Image 1 (cartoon, helix red, strand yellow):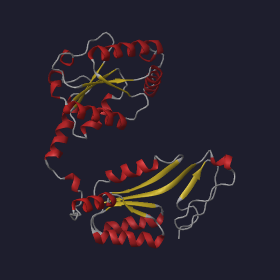
Image 2 (cartoon, helix red, strand yellow; image 1 turned 135 degrees about the horizontal axis):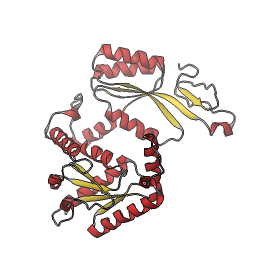
Image 3 (cartoon, rainbow, N blue to C red; image 1 turned 60 degrees about the horizontal axis):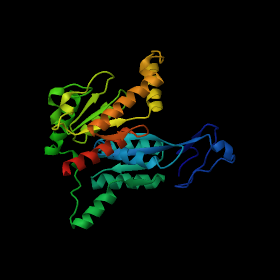
Image 4 (cartoon, one colour; image 1 turned 180 degrees about the vertical axis):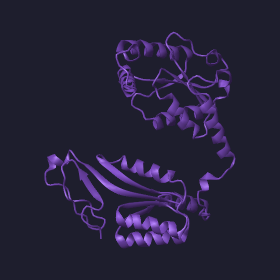
Amino acid sequence: MWKKGDCFHRVGFIHNLYTRGGDFPIEPEDEDQSEFMDIYFNVHLVSDSTGETLNAVMRAACAQFEDVSPLEHNYYLVRSERQLERVLREIEGAPGVVLYTISDENLRRELEAKCRKIGAPTLPVIDPAVDVLSRYLGLSSQHRVAGQYHLDANYFERIEAINYTLAHDDGAGVADLKQADVVLVGVSRTSKTPTCVYLANRGVKAANVPLVPGVDPPAVLLGPDAPLVVGLKIMPDRLTQIRRHRLLSLSESPETEYADEEAVKREIVQANRLFIRQKWRTIDISRRSVEETAAAILNIIAEHRRT
């Protein structure tokens, strides 16, 4: 059984909460006070590989709840009974939800049995997808550890894309921009570099070129045989805010033309006119995460390749 305060903790006003097995936590009596609290709870991520799948699933699931903050306990490359024993001791010491991706059947059974004993709910996160594919294909899965990380052609293409992207960041390597799958252009602080790095990890050769007031973009982007170019747009007030925070983080004064509201507006107007003149596809990144921007760009790349 879980003990008092083991799994759920509210911060703000302090309340002692009781849980029983897999029950939900008892809510505070004062509803007004509860509006100022976050729920903290333990999530154990147990993987026989890198744990990337677990982290992505856990964060996507938690994003569906407001005022929820998971306390992550990460255990990677768990491939032996000795390693699993250490993990189980950690879970027993801080009970919570257990998400896992483990291929070895013996280790899976041991993990499930121990978690049932202490009342910790478990979820093998890729099993539903594997089961659907198995039924559809009429095949049995191979239970391969880190099967998605084999050193095949796709792996080396991804490494090549990462190398290309790093060599073509912030306007570098203009001479061979035509080799890019996509070139991102935009004014300063429009998340060009992190978006390119994310795309590179998806196997996309992504370059980026900053738009600087008074400086023409590289000619290679303006001709009829230019590579695919995507312009990153942003609202002036949002960009001003981002730039001011950037300057403050560098212990510099935000009272400069770089973060001046009127100057920023002029800069964005010039960039938008360039996008229209060149008929480049654009994405407004004002309220998008890097992942959402990259997903939109991947759709544009797929559409471009079909034409």
